[in-house]
Length: 459
Image 1 (cartoon, one colour):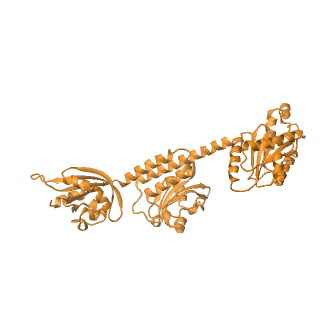
Image 2: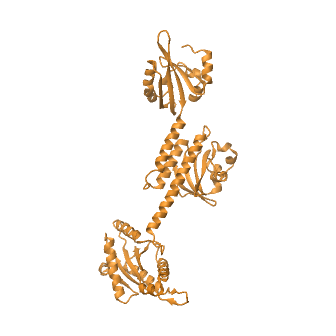
Image 3: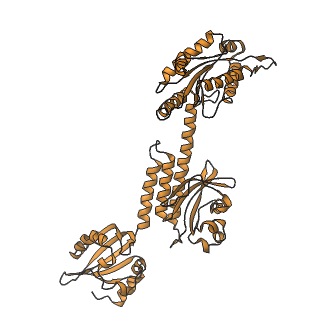
């Protein structure tokens, strides 16, 4: 086919890419849109085989389509095509055969090509975001947010993806993704030294593809310190309050501006992260409720059993001793019957607070029901643990409960304790401590008694 001037003019006016290929598989013409796309001039393409422009693997994939169009069929397909320079695109392609009217001979074909890479990538991100957000709840929120940051980096072609929390002027990296050298979570910066200060002022998506030539960014401390040229940021809002930001950045200048689709997908990723953070917060609150005694604020029996089992597993790998003790308020039923349950509840709260202030943060204090508390002391031998329990007993005894009329009530506790043997189940340790507690009660109360098992182990 002879490509005349009128055809060239018409082809060059089309917004879509178009090429004419002869029946030998050689380019005879490519329009301006196609030349712009591949970055070559007409004389660099004309006469060359398709295999010289498109990579070998992609050429093998589309050879079947060439055979069909040269057999006289119109062909449409969408596929990923990699060019010889290494660039890959998702292309929507239609081949139309050029058939001679008289002979029916196929002299070549027209190729009409549309680059749908951005839309295909966007669809992939949409599917992935839906999968991440709707993943089963046992998946850690950290993993889900990191996956969203990875998707964002790959779609936007940026090096870093960060979710930060902002408190006053403090910027803290909470989640971070990068193919190489990610910013460690927990890293802290002054908000004014980050581009997020611009993001929060705008209260919307902010973007730059060439920071050194953009007025708000060129003289910014973040550019001076980190030389980040490309940046896209959006505030994260939780329950109507700005919590922090999500942002994607690179030290490289971006070759083209962020599109409206990029901005929309940025908003989608941000919304997904907000959803995960909100649901994670709800889950943590529910877990806290499940493990907390509502009256005293201490952990409850459910937490105690899980903590005990956790320590049992740890004792397989270390030889640290553990003590389990039951602490019971003396004559509590009489106090409740005489002064009422409101006074009894306040006494429980005061006693819980007192005991909690006399132990280490590594120890575990729980209310397991009624007037009874349980305590796990780790890493101390029997003599050291006994000193802690005696300090608790004396501390409670000296902490009288004040009544509204100005009088006071003496409060004492009886304690039963046992050393936990290796791999001893919770029920066994509880029984040993309970028997020792019974002896403290029988022995006159306001005292500590160790189990017979502990006395034997200590010898």
